[in-house]
Length: 398
Image (cartoon, rainbow, N blue to C red; front, side, top):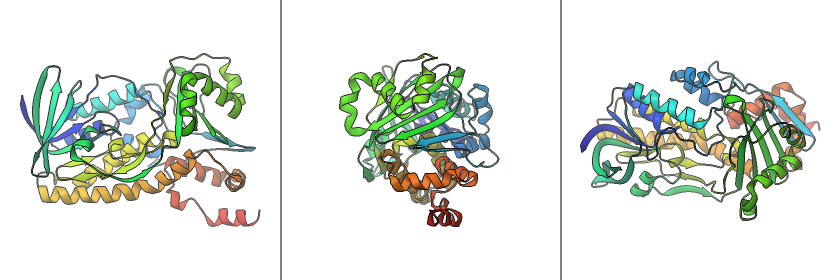
């Protein structure tokens, strides 16, 4: 089997399927490849913040997400020490709510949107290698069952996760890298209040996120150096963390039940890879990954996809024009994500100090500042615009 496409997208989840959808809508011939079989669950915090939901609305995919029945999330609480913030993120393009659909539902919706837009989708198809003309990527070598075949393409998009085959085959170097900071365990629980809640204590972070069918994701984060100790009893570690960090939540859990097996990871890499080269580009976790504690992965994947298709536009068939467009994408991707990356690493240090708690105490006294804080958390407020003259005046007066 020998095929020729304008774009081959490797990986059909939250970065790959929207990429395929957009290029197909632009009139390109697109092949979307997924190694696994759909639908299938995956490790995820599930949360799509307001900027991500606004993109789903723009792409006309949001109605499908709403139809899954996952509850809209329009408020969030954050408790650390004796301080509690309770508020809402700002709206983005008229969207005030976040959503947290189960991934086997979200990923299937996105893949179907790509197919409906004209992309061809093949699951259970493993990319073995890339093809080259000099240093330019010209396609992929694929295995499906016992069949191996070559697909040629003007652009190969690696959307295949933080251990990306595309990144490995092009030798994409890591340009920014930081140590792992946390490990995490989570499961789904019944009969909990359908609320988005965050709780922090020294060395501990606990959160709840409502999802489909009345279930709530309950998760806990720990310092990375405890992973070897905790992995033998992840459920015990999760329940102990909830009891210590969010005792009210632990009491509520006693009235419900665990709905699924425990999920966990000690593999939360923090990096930026080189994003592009001749004939190839990386999006989503393939090009950039950070600790999941701020639940920004899905939203930032959507933002990268929109940036990529905006940069490429109708220039895919001109190699020189495409290379310039990919260069713009690479530079703008880093500018878009690096500040939130650094802020995520600060959160993942699990070390809220005296000065941070005093800052939160001041913020908690103002509904406007509280909403601004949660807007910075969601990405609705750029992180570098969070500090206002009002906040500085309040801090000076304490």
